Amino acid sequence: MSSLSGSSRGALWRDRDFLRLWSAQTVSDFGARITRDGLPMMAVVSLAALPGQLGVLYALTSGAALVVGLSAGGYIDGTLRRPILIATDLIRAAVLISLPVAAWLGVLSMVQVYVVAALVASASVFFDIADHAYLPGLVGKAQVVDANARIAATESVAEMGGPALAGVLFQWLTAPFAVVVNAVTYLVSAVLLAGIRAPEPPPVREDGDEGGWLHGVVTGARTAWSEARVRVLLIMSATGGLFGGFFGALYIAFVLRDLGLNPALLGIGIATGGVGALAGSAIAMPMARRLGVGPTICVAGALAALGVMIVLLAPTNTVGAMACLMVSQFLGDCFGVVPLVLATSLRQSVLPGNVLGRVDATFRATGGGAAVVGALAGGALGQVLGMRVTLLLAVAGLMIGPLVGMLSPLRKVREMPA
Image 1 (cartoon, rainbow, N blue to C red):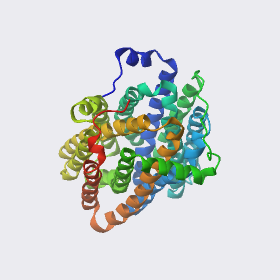
Image 2 (cartoon, rainbow, N blue to C red):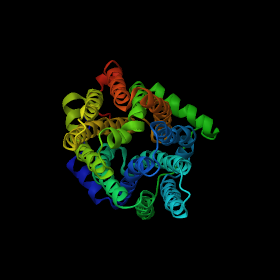
Image 3 (cartoon, rainbow, N blue to C red):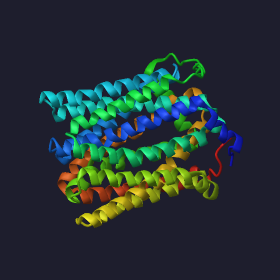
Image 4 (cartoon, helix red, strand yellow):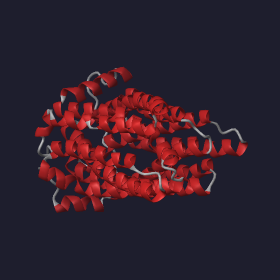
């Protein structure tokens, strides 16, 4: 397996521009976790949202990936990426501020929560696509695995602190005003990104790159589908998005209502997942060295699905529910982050840099579109079958992707391409 030398790894620690990008992502990740968990908390606690409404909320946030993925990839590949990162941070901050303003005026409603969730999610997807395309040019392809592992580690720290902070904020403050903290994180991220000094490599254009958004969609999809290893990752992204939509739509409501935990305890439980994700970012490469890159992606994905199932076996007493929640979050996030690190690095390693934005947009659109269907179906089934049964169906569905991967050429990928 291609690996970084000690001097290469040390070079990242000395690279001030990478450290600025890394810091900006860390701060932004904290904000993203507050938004992700805070808006459903606000919908449940302050606006008494029903399971169907939570399904719509999750579908809107997931649908942003579909809409942006269908339009953003070609644009991102054809322009400088850092200005996009700064602009999307500023947009997210401005949109979130509208919630406390509406609450202060006494006009806050689910409709506004829907709109804010969709806009913030759209900007976040734009940010993530641009970030994945920007990173290889900043650090060099030889260091993308190490850079992605470090970013995943700090995302794990955000997963530890962000949900816990969200739970405490939404427990102590009125929910909309807790979102102000979220807006500030995006402003800090924008300032850090503005401090990067390294000139960004100019975009490399090919014949036909001026063909508009439709050409970008076709190019991204064709490139992803024509590379056998990437094609399997795309199929796995679709199945994960579909059944993850079931889970995402109902999970917070299940914990708050069926298990009877309050927002602060929910935040602590989710934060435990951050500890697991930190462990996952540390074991990703050792697992890949032992099992191979492709098998590790598949095995870890299956273990992540089994881990999240534990919360569905929880009793309704507080101690038992918290124990199951914390174990489930730890195992699910630990093994869930492993395929993320390896799959992202694999795409960045085998594909040319001038199509990374469009391919990442294809992944976002595929996963997001599937998640929209899953969220709407999960919300509807949650009202008919109950949340626990629907979530069990989601866990079963999450096992499909790893199974497909093990029956595909991905299982033969032993080493990360140089």
